[in-house]
Image (cartoon, rainbow, N blue to C red):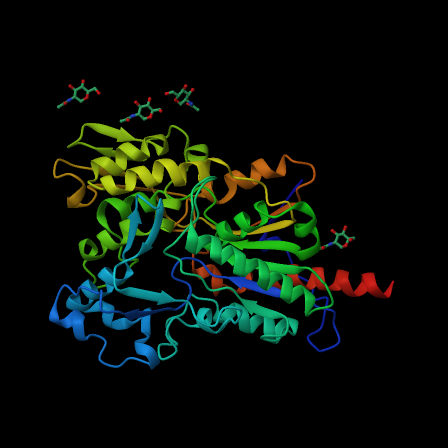
Length: 429
Ligand SMILES: *[C@@H]1O[C@H](CO)[C@@H](O)[C@H](O)[C@H]1NC(C)=O
Ligand SMILES: *[C@@H]1O[C@H](CO)[C@@H](O)[C@H](O)[C@H]1NC(C)=O
Ligand SMILES: *[C@@H]1O[C@H](CO)[C@@H](O)[C@H](O)[C@H]1NC(C)=O
Ligand SMILES: *[C@@H]1O[C@H](CO)[C@@H](O)[C@H](O)[C@H]1NC(C)=O
C-alpha cells in the first residue's frame, strides 16, 4: 500500500497541542554519517606521521579524550593528515572485521541523549545541517522533552554492518544499544511504541534493527519509522568519493588527503550503488582502463581505482547485505528531497582515476542520493499488502538541507502528531 503525497498539497493540520497532558509516543533520533560527535584518545601504540600529529590537539580533556569529529582545525592541511590517520579504519582479514587504527581509541558519548547530534561542535553552532532544528521543533511544536520522551542514538558512523555470517562488532553493538534504548523509551512512556526518526545512513541502521527483530518486538516497540533522505540503494556519488575523495564541499581541504581515510570507512562501502537498485546502468566510464562500470562491477571498480583492500570486504560482507533489502515490517514514512542535481555518472579520462573525473553527469535526486535509490526500494515494499509506506517528496530539498527545511519539519510534526492523536483518542474512546 503506498500513499504518495506531495508536500505542496498537504496542509498539515495540527492535531495535538503542545503540553504535558498528551500521551506521546517516544521519539528516537538516529543521525546519519557524520551527524554526531565522535571522541578520540591516543595511546602509546599510536604512531603519529609527524611531530604535529604527536602533539595535536594541545588541549585534551580528562583521560586524554578530545573531539575527533568535528573539529575545524581539520581544515588546515598538516592537521587534515592527523585527522585522517585517526579516523582511518583497518580491515582485519583474520578476524573478518573492521577496527580502529592502532593506538586510537574512540567513543560516542551521551548515548540516549540528543546532545551530540544537535551540534557537531558546541562552539560552532553556525554549523547547521544536523539535528538541532529537528529536536527543538519537536520540543516547541509537539511538546517533546529531552530524556523523557525525546532521545538520541549517536553512532560511530565509520562502521557499518555485514551480511549474514560475518562479524561486525561495532555496528552490532550499536544495534544492541539502539534496541535497549527503544525498549527503555517505551517502558518510560506507558508502553507506547517509539517513533524512529532517522537521517540518511541512520535509516539503513534502523532498517537493519527492524529486520533483525522478531515481528512481535517490532509491533510492540516501534509505531513508525520516519526516514529522511535514506539512501536505500546507495549513491553514485560514493564512487566519486572512492575514486577521487570527497571534501563534502568544504573549501580548502585537499581531497586526496582524505580519500585514503574515506576509503577505509566500512559505512562508505555500504553506501556504494547497490546492484538491485542500479542494475546494469553504466555509472562510471574510464578511458584509461577502456572500461565502463555498473553497480554489478563494483569489485572490478575498487580494484581499478587502486583500492584492492576493499575488494574482499565488499564482496563478502557488503554485497550480501545490500542485496537483501528486507521490508521494515512497521509503517514507514519516507521523506525524500528531489529535483536537486545529483551525480548520476562519471567519465574519467586518460589520466586515470587519480586525476578526478573529466565529466560529471547529473540527474535527479537530493544532491547526494539518486532518486532511484531514494524511492526504488520503497516501491518494492509497497507491493506487500501488509507493509504501510508513505512517500513524501520535497521538491528542491537537499540531502542534509532536509534537517532544516520548514516543509520537511512540518511533515515530521504531522506524522508524529497523528500517531500521538491516535494514542490519545484510542485511550479515551
Ligand atoms: C543485465 O545484464 C545481464 C547480463 O549481462 C542480463 O542478463 C540482464 O538481462 C541485464 N538486465 C537488464 C535489466 O538489462
Ligand atoms: C577497448 O575495448 C574495446 C571493446 O571493449 C576494443 O575493441 C578496443 O580495442 C579497446 N581499446 C583499447 C585501446 O584497448
Ligand atoms: C560488468 O558486469 C556485467 C554483468 O555482470 C558483466 O557482463 C560485465 O562483463 C562486467 N564488466 C566489467 C568491466 O567487469
Ligand atoms: C491509528 O490506530 C489504528 C488502530 O490501532 C491503526 O490502524 C492506524 O494505523 C493508526 N494510525 C496511525 C497514523 O498510526
